[in-house]
Figure 1 (cartoon, rainbow, N blue to C red):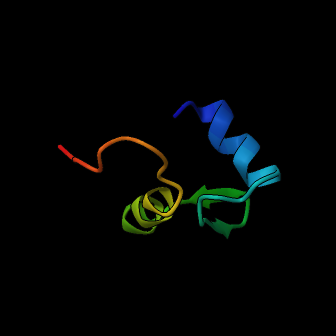
Figure 2 (cartoon, helix red, strand yellow):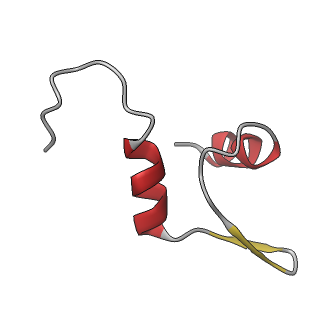
Figure 3 (cartoon, rainbow, N blue to C red):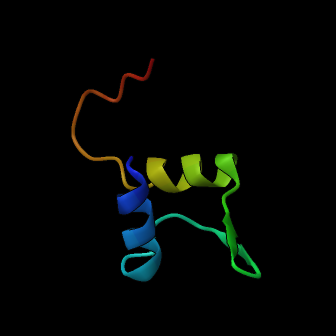
Length: 48
């Protein structure tokens, strides 16, 4: 994902959970993975 996509997500859809510490934005990698798995579509379900 691009930085642009992540910034846009924060302003609009809010798919990815994040923490705001002052002006800094931080993401918990495991929570991001869980959020993305919840939006999975199509495919065979096989994961690498």
